[in-house]
Image 1 (cartoon, rainbow, N blue to C red):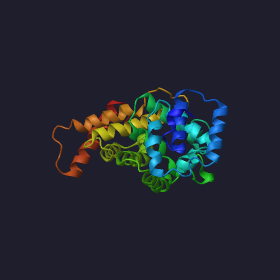
Image 2 (cartoon, rainbow, N blue to C red):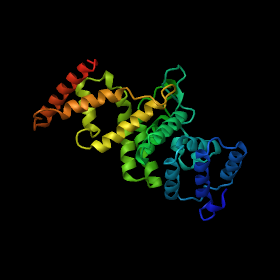
Image 3 (cartoon, rainbow, N blue to C red):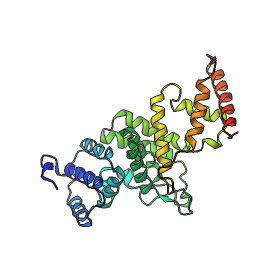
Length: 276
């Protein structure tokens, strides 16, 4: 480990070293073996959870956060600092093939895509944690994950509290846990349901938060095999629906009337997009 890490707690220095290894490309297997032995020797056992986040988030904001996560999992460090995320490795997620895709590998790919587009830490944390309720989905239903949101919310909140994660990261992660899968299905939604999805996610009153959520959804989409670098196809529909709602000539003051007007505007927009 470089001498420049001498001022750090050994465990925190190890985390920084792994992040730098990831940015350097493929790591030497012997070096990973050494790091694994250091984990086994207890390098992380005395690190306070609240001290993990500043160092981990530094790597999360690096150029190769997915590879960093992979190395942390491989050497046994992820199990100690983020057991909720580590438990997702080996769990299948529905994809094109009958066997599904390993959730851990999907998270790695999503994080690297977030780095590619320069996404902020809140987007990366959301991608890291939004699926934590899927680790113990009933085996007979895999690769489907029924009721994972109910399981995931308390885990995500406990994880964020333990590490002292900033509130804006917690909020976007929780929003993504509840809404990302819905956003991936917008082409099958009724116009009223799509208008409500826009409302819930800040499209009308919190556009900056809405844009971050859209980034989460797009990175999540591109994480799947064969989609690297592709445009998220649902983004066009969502933006058309959002603009249709914002362009209402005289929006009603009554909330229910406003929602009805938005639904009608969305229906017209989807029809023009060939999605009616």
